[in-house]
Amino acid sequence: MKKDDCALVLGGYVNGYSIIQELYEKKIEEIVLFGYSRELASYSNKVKKFVLIDKTPENLYREIEELHKEYRKIIIFPTDDLQLENLHIIYSEIHSFCFLPFNYENLTTCLDKYIQYSYCEKLGVPYPKTVLLQKKEDMENIETIQFPILLKPSKREDLKRKVFRNREIDNPEDLEEIKKEIEGYLESGIKFLASEVIPGNGSCIYAYIGYRDQKGKILNEWTGKKLSQYPDNFGVFSAASNEGSEEVLLQGRLLLNGMNIKGIAQPEFKYDARDKKYKLMEINLRSMMWHRVGNLSGVNLHYSQYLDALGEKVNPQVQMKNKIIHFLYLKHEIRNLIMQKRYVRTFLKNIIESDKTYFAVYDRKDIKPFLKDSMDMLKEATRKLL
Image 1: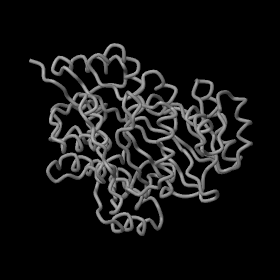
Image 2 (image 1 turned 135 degrees about the vertical axis):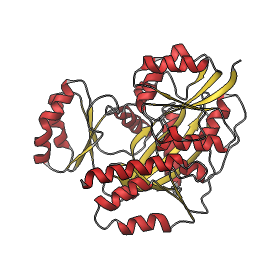
Image 3 (image 1 turned 90 degrees about the horizontal axis):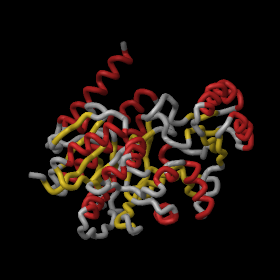
Image 4 (image 1 turned 45 degrees about the vertical axis):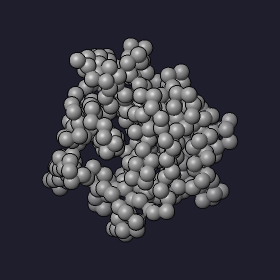
């Protein structure tokens, strides 16, 4: 006999595990995890079942169909862009029994960072000076931007093929060194954005995170900021907090509504001290690594999605701002300690200068994911030392 519904989390890294934690805390026990490998969340005692999948839409479709034999409705929580693209491909086959947290009509265009910047232009949201590189001849347009520049694919390509996620280029000489490499990527069909680098380190990154339902209403939202990144100022989350400005909130809402984005989305901004504006870096259309900050400060976006998928009432939540919450991923913080000079002060500040500090992955009632992550970190450190 089929059960009513389950939460299907795609991806078992920090973001996937944080989704599992939030749902389980809300007494949702039918949680299934699909992953490309035995990542840390697959060791959690909060998961009913773990299924190993590959990165093809065909395999994802087969495994979802198999899961449908057990559950009438499947509520899906993606954690990377490739999963979104694969779900979009198989949408027509699964949407009758799956809740898919995106706008089918515009998902693929909204994943394109150049399209995101074009909406900034229409909506009056600040963004870095940027040029689009589609062919070799476009490389000349980089000269219109002052060095240093940040080069990144217009869509996440590193999950599908070997290409960098982003790269800072400090001067024309550095650009000349990688010119042939970039031209090769362009010939293979990968488009790039070349943008001005906004001064400031990882602590200048702010985010708006909201859940917008299929009718176009934002049901819950929160803001936060990164305290540090790994491995550098253009890396991923290492530490974050629940701090955020009203301007970030308003710009985030404007983008979700103006672009007709549905599901969980995260416009990320960098504060530019030169003109005192928050400029869009990118919009993530799924849960990112530090979204547990919202949960820890009183806003449960994934539970909001779960209730909305079942047609139940979603109560508006007000984010706690009178106390400072810090959220650290210890693996990245330790790597920063090893790789960055004079990082000790930042590390201690991230831990101490808060009303409450939480560590990603650590849960004393579900310790295996933390142990798995710690062992991976020790193995990596040993390899580097050897």
